[in-house]
Image (cartoon, rainbow, N blue to C red; front, side, top):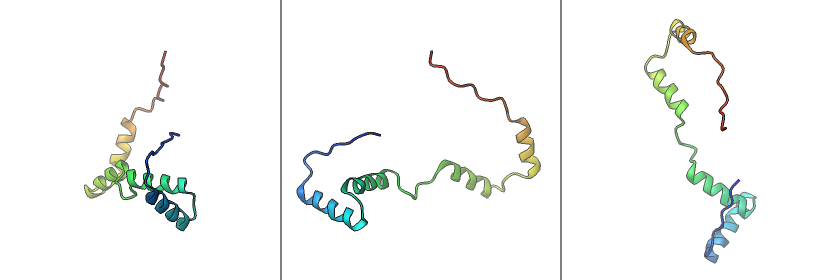
Length: 85
């Protein structure tokens, strides 16, 4: 995992982080990690798989026969591992 150093953090901000961490029952470092993760990866983000499934559902989806047809057409050859040589 990566490390991040924050320089010149005002004392009042550090104090507020410590208080917030104590309110959540965790260390200041854990609190900062949670704040950063929540900010850059919000829980309400739409995931691609969920979006595609909802589009398919709205369009009526596939019948069992159509799904079986696609399954028969699908290439079932195992993927080859990448070579970096």
